[in-house]
Image (tube, rainbow, N blue to C red):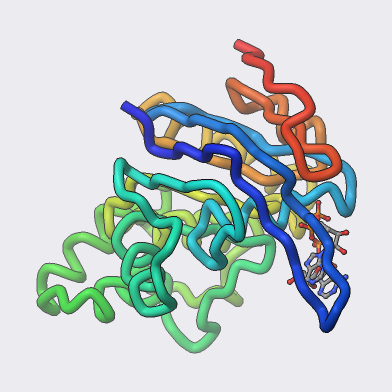
Length: 227
Ligand code: ADP
Ligand code: ADP
């Protein structure tokens, strides 16, 4: 069952009369339960591809289906709705609210999703337990290690049960111990059947995924199953 289907996907940026083709015809299919790393040198188009996959931007050519739904030509409001419903994001900066407890941070997407208060607390608690932070519910981000903060961000990404976990350089801000901690969590989520797409420029991180897609000059250069 495909979660991501990109066909001849192209993205051309226009700045005045200057055009730049950042993606030049990407064909990529990612199935439910896959753990895929996207790698490539700086300027290769990784961020652009991440923005497309994450419904933060739209293609200028070709098509994109997410969870079977054609999202190629949606407007801003429709894209926002798709993002909330289908995608859990994890970024290099954890983007947690410093004044809120771990529990409240994880509840936030459900507040916007209009889930009842009692239900929110139950679900956010369960999400934090799943990432191994059941004993840190009331701690604020500043009281947690970097790895623990990123775990909170992962719990927040997963609390709405999205079809896709999309992580952009999730270990870019972590020391080596915390990096291993977060990568172990991703292994565990993969084993539980989550669909994970990880954008990274670190080979040691990418090698933890089951498949590595190398982007180069806006096209898929190689696509290899690693285990
Ligand atoms: P990466 O994430 O691999 O570093 P990007 O997707 O950020 O690559 O960028 C790919 C290419 O597209 C680069 O040459 C970059 O300068 C160009 N680019 C990215 N965003 C824009 C933009 N908004 N306008 C014009 N050019 C852009
Ligand atoms: P990264 O290397 O982390 O991918 P970049 O520094 O390439 O980030 O890009 C940061 C932001 O600037 C992105 O939103 C990207 O789309 C935009 N950008 C990159 N290159 C250009 C460019 N040539 N013109 C306009 N915007 C750009």
